[in-house]
Length: 248
Length: 270
Image (spheres, each protein chain N blue to C red):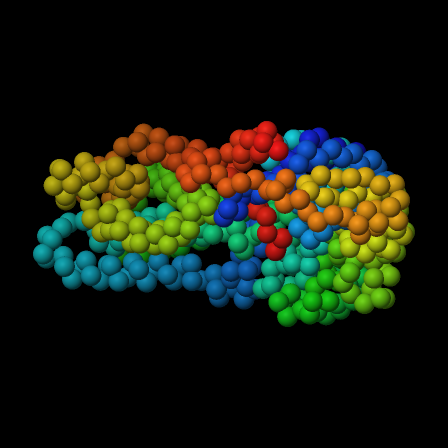
């Protein structure tokens, strides 16, 4: 289970703190497939990063009682000077997974062949994406975070990814971020829309699609904090958002 | 542990220490591969660079020997001085702005910025230490220097200097992510500290007033201690080990507090 309790996240900008998520409560159980939608900049990726543990919430708590993958969007993250195999070796090392038994899978699945032993810097975008996906299938997680990753690669490769994720790992939990409602409808059983820093849950792909489509424009004033006075409060996002909440 | 779980790709529940050790090990290998590549010739630069430094300085000092009428063993003096500088100068150099090239790694939960810093500090330590030892043995073999009088003192002095370098690297590295100034100013500051840190003088040769001021610099104590270990019977070294340890501890604690504030940030780019 993953449980988010009153999770808020703010980032500093040149004109003050920007609150991306506010008081988000969310529970994801084993085996659940959660589809996440929202406008650009609504906080989808932020939510995924918080759940992955790559970042900490500004306030609130996140509990994980199952293993959670890194965000699979990840076509970057490779050291260009290193070969694909070196990058795989690095991932295997940090996750404590045996490298020798996984290299064959990655070589076959990524269709990179001999290129696996060439520097990633010379790869095409498609090759990188294939490597990224293959590497992320090397570690077995209870919950996979997938941030728009399936959009890459050709149809054949996408088909292979779907088999690997949704058939071979049909018992796992997944959190999918996408703008593709058909994709989410086919693979998810819960849907959330992120709007104004809050999440709204829908039990049906069509409902979330309509909610997204007829969403009123963002109420910017409600969500954005005003700039703190110069020299004041650069260290305390909380103080600022609390102030904001009172005035809101 | 390479159990069955590891082979199937399942995650085993490891202690944080074990994870951290694994991560730092992986970062070390990644870093050295990236910097030096597979052909091991690049690694030689670690030794060649301080060797050039030392040779230049040794030549200069030998030429000026009559002016100074100094009895200190020049080669040993240069070796200890410049190797020490490399410790506290290169470690921060490698940690400043390290977030940029390591952003993507932080997307893996078990990789913390502290691990990135520690790996870089460790690699730098290994490089400079190897060069120090190799140079020492080489200079000893051609009889430019005598073997150290007190190897244990050399060891402790070297470790204390490395600790100082690491603590400084944590501090400057993490602060450089919040203050651009650090990146711009550090090279200039390092240049000023270079001669002041004892690379080119013995504290005993200075007027007492200058001594008391310069001895606020922690690394100066380390260098003097190092020389005490090397050729202590020929000089009068000024150092306070307790001062160096206290300074190192405070700097380490401050550095760690700053590392905690280095975060991924809003950008989605990695």
